[in-house]
Amino acid sequence: MCVTAHYIDANWILQSRIISFSDLDPPHTGAIISETIFEILLEWGIQNKVSTITLDNTSSNDKAAENLRYLFSRRSDFQFMEKFFHVRCAAHILNLMVQDGLKVITSVISKIRNFVLYLKRSPSRLFKFGEIARQLGIYTFRGLRIDVPIRWNSTFKMLDVAFHYKSVFPEYACRDLHYVWLPLDQEWDMYERIRDILSVFDEVTEIFSGTKFSTANKFLSNLVKVKRALDKGILLEISCVRDMTIAMKLKFDKYWSDCHTLLTIVSILDPCVKMFALTNFYREIYGPVEVNERIEDVKSSLSELYSFYAVDKNVTTHEGSIAPSTTSSLLQSKEPRGDPLNDLYLHIKASTSMEAPKSDLEVYLSEQCIECEDSKFNILEWWKLSSMKY
Image (cartoon, rainbow, N blue to C red; front, side, top):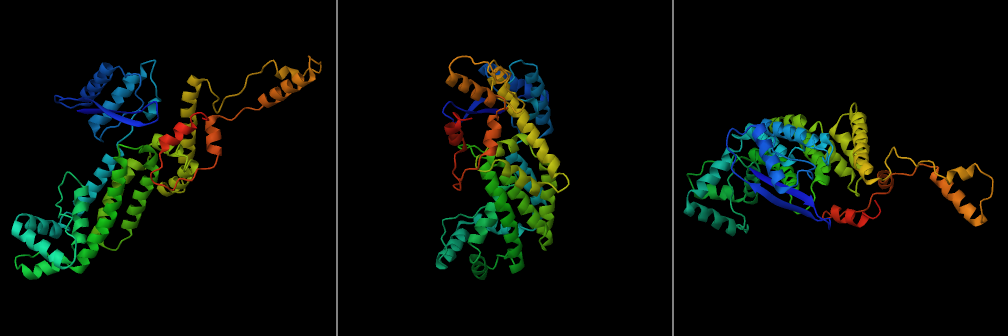
């Protein structure tokens, strides 16, 4: 079992460190997993610094997360709200979705798979294929790929490379009488639709699996990107592609019809989108009946989470107000108390304090989104520069 600690250092730079890589004796029950993780945290002395935990989506891991949540909740120095403790691995969910879809089309893409295997088993056939590609002016820098069951994106890469050499296939068939897997035009069309859908999943998986940049704030927008691809695929007239998409959509609805609120909150804390991320994206994910309820739930959780930290730091919360002070009593007293200018300043201060000040969260949300069209926008660098303001 590998345990990795992710944290933001004093300079607002994302860091990741493997803190344990150990053999875990069977049975791999939730109790054993949680006990082992907790012992590792105690060994490192970071048991009071853990905010969230992310695991692959299995029943034993769900139980482990539940056990850890209970262990942490009993500690007085617990640093995070319990309901935000377990964050499911988005990349693994994508993997489960695509695997369900690929089961539907395994036989459909067999022609491409069999041909690639046929070439790779013979250096002479592979050389002949490369020669034809060069004669047709096709660069041969991309090697043919074969898919493997445990890595769904290998299927996408196999199809993507096949399209790169698409014009080579019929030429090769003319020179090798044993080649019997030449796809028909309608099959190429089908492969193209499959590739286009899988390309979205490949792109989003790369983003979710990033280690050098913050990924949580990219969750919601990419979730919508996946849903758009599925909605488009369901409308296709090619039956096998439509069936593949339906199978993937069922898994999508199982895991992401209930978006993880914490990841939505992080999207709101992206200064490029703020509340637009919630209102615009939620309308695409949910139907018109439940979208308003979902939005209000996130807003409530955001306020609750802000207050959770703001109380400890003695700053204004949404419910915060300024307590009556000696200066406010001057508004009811008409008796001069010294220098007129000083009296004026006291009156100004008192009248200003009568209004409940906005919290940092309210100020942040009320301001315009910043322009950040560059995909390499560094959200942590922005918050570092804004940390004196908020």
